[in-house]
Amino acid sequence: MGKKDFYPLLFVFLIIAIFPWLVGGNEYYISILIFLGINGIITMGLSLLMGYAGQISLGHAGFFGLGAYSSGILTTQYSIHPLAAFFAGIFLSAIIAFLVGKPTLRLKGHYMAVATLGFGEILFIVFNELSPLTGGPSGLSGIPILTFMGYSLEGARYLYLVWGFVILLLLFSLNVINSRVGRALRAVHGSEIAANAMGVDASRYKVQVFVLSAVYASIAGSLYAHFVTFISPSSFSLMFSILLLMMVVVGGAETIWGALLGAMVLTLLPEYLRGLEDFEVLAYGGILMVVLLFMPQGILLGVRKLFEKKRN
Amino acid sequence: MNERILQVEGLQKSFGGLRAIDLLDFTVVKDGVKSVIGPNGAGKTTLFNLITGIIPPTGGVLQFAGRSLNGLKPHTIARLGISRTFQNLELFGNMTVLENVMVGRHIQTVSGLFSAGLRLPGMRKEEREIKEKAWEELQFMGLEEKGAMKASALPLGEQKLLEIARALATQPKLLLLDEPASGLNMRETGKLSETILRIRERGITIMLVEHDMSLVMEISDEVLVLNYGKKIAEGAPRDIQRNPEVIAAYLGEETGNA
Image (cartoon, rainbow over all chains, first blue to last red; front, side, top):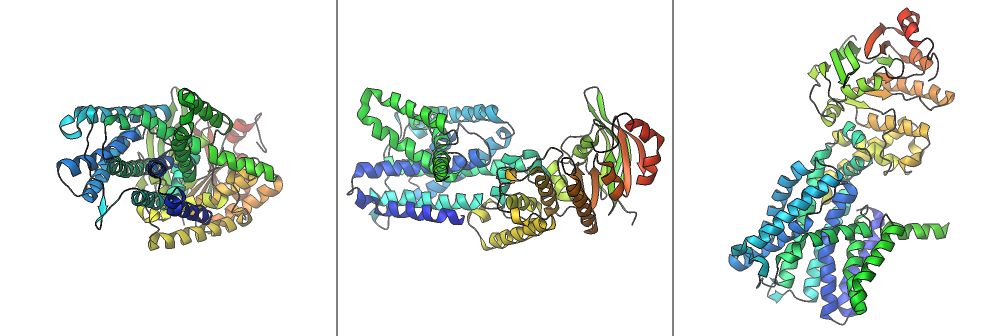
């Protein structure tokens, strides 16, 4: 974490802390913020992968699903403790990400996108067809709500749990960026040939970050499963991978904060536009186009540039 | 004193039908400055790319400090102690000047993803050392006041110096400089030749590709002349200047600054 990250972090922390009071305990608002946190965890990992390692993935809905199904299946059908199931999901996602990442991260640009897209589709089919375990297309229900010391973690308590993870993973990510590993990643992005000549084993770090981002997605998946208590394959389709990618791009892939902002915009926007009814999709698409046309580096850097222009 | 740090035997590199490097033999003596000169397209940069493993040779043997470099990846070769600069600047433009040099400390440090993410004490100590050493190299190159600037915002001359600082931060045994003086004015070139000699005093062997003949003749211990990928002469600067084959290769083309 750099010094400049301290106040934004404090701000996020305080907002989350008082949020349940701000909205008078309104469950709808709290649930939106929980979904925002879950999406934010995935986009932070994707931002490390895309903005820092310069790799693209269209398969992260799959890792999200791996986490969700690990938690769901192990807790409902094998009565395993949710915490153990949570770690099992992380472990599984990390291993699969390693096996998938090792060969695909040699690919560049579009090829990498297509390879990860294929991987996501394979998982989507597995979630659908492995019905004895996953419940198939009709889904898996009865996933337990988490409890801690006798309290069931619902509403504001779950909000704090999810955002506790968001803040810890945000700290972890910021630390990685401002370290030897983060510099190596940015160096690969800046000039792969020079990074290699400085002794940076680019492919090794790409695989590591791919695994890390898969772990983030798996954590988000487990948190999701215990929140909604019912999961079905449609939540882990290619459309969600694309939505995640859009969040990162709209917010700004080159900063972790941008990815979080993108998750916020694209999680909240549909809620705001709901009043437009039939025109919702049209407005949604229009807003995205305008943002990307005028702020190709994402909202965060785009707005920062606007402010700098004004100051000068 | 005559210990050989780099030995090249029968080196070949073909691009399709073109023989960019053609059966080249030479050695580099430790602690010296060896320059590689030749007309444009003679294979000088290709030679550097072969030594650093960026492209694999078609044939021949490269030996560095008794170890074969054949088949090694660029990052492994960097670890063995060969560093370089690039003719067409390859800075990390998205990072600050200081951060560029800090990347150079990569192979001298070990912190991984987890110790970085959790900011473990060992990692923090290492981070301080990385910063210190990076500042030292910036000072050595006279760039200490530019540390916080974006690398891409530096003027060309200083970008060239920054590449050298970054390469030095790896603590190389052999440093390959690819046309460090191109684009520099007379005064900057004069300073550069002093700097190269100061680098040599640190016990770092230098290979230099350069078109500025007065610089080459002033600081080289040995000069290797290439033409069409072949060695046409090798020896002390004074002998090279009188070599009829070298003069023939250069005549009608260029004799001074490229």
